[in-house]
Image 1 (cartoon, one colour):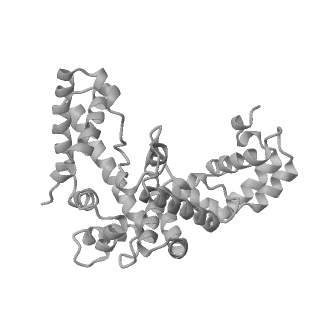
Image 2 (cartoon, rainbow, N blue to C red):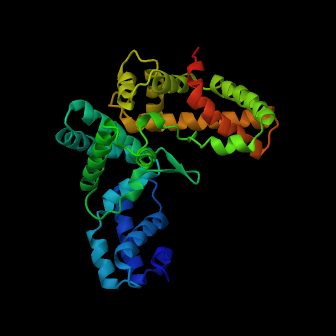
Image 3 (cartoon, rainbow, N blue to C red):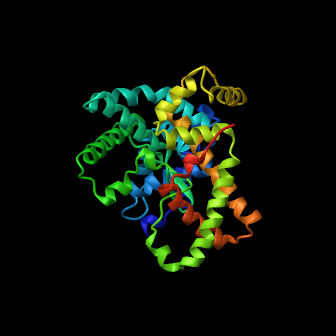
Length: 333
């Protein structure tokens, strides 16, 4: 059986027993992270077969040795963060935010570069790319072999290299695609190639769908709550960075402050605590999802369009969001 085809079902009963014990300990330490035993087991199985399964079934003793070296609690947290678990992200911020800042300042040439890298790393860790309908977090590449902080240091270093390349206009198209910056964090409206669709849809049909698209987008934005509109305006119209929005929320006079305090009380969080970039990313993603839901609903229920037609409109919406900047049409009452 090829290595890439193997799963946790190919492990021995002894290996399963050891992984179950590791999971039980991690779950006891962090019961609110929302990581299931099967997901945890599959992650460890992937690591086992990657490093020990090149020549067939790995020796049970070698597997035990590898498992004993896994930074299980770090892996548990990373998996929970990759899944968007709120509690895990707060724990990550609390435990590792200061370390990220120290490393970034140590490696970067300037304070501005350090702050840019911190923003970029948080975007990558939260994940803004959509693959097969799923958000892909950088955390999904952490295997638990080695400490989470050692892995984070490497992530920071690579982000600094990307920043340096971009500042010298040496970044290739492939690199640009692989290292999407903060300004491209459209979690639900990923950029699409326009050429193919231009060739497929004739002018009259295209204009008919464009009219429906514009109307549905305007209706979707108009239906957003005030805090969602503010977030999108801060981020896309005023071009504020994640940390700048976070500082605004912390300000007692911020129009977002009251909304955040109400949300904090429902989660038993401390409303007076520091707001982190990951929190802003989660709010933005929820706003994108809300726009997409309202957009599809408007086209389906009021426009009477089918699934394929809605997909065409979604492609046109991508163009309009990028070109005409519909975010500028946002307003709050």
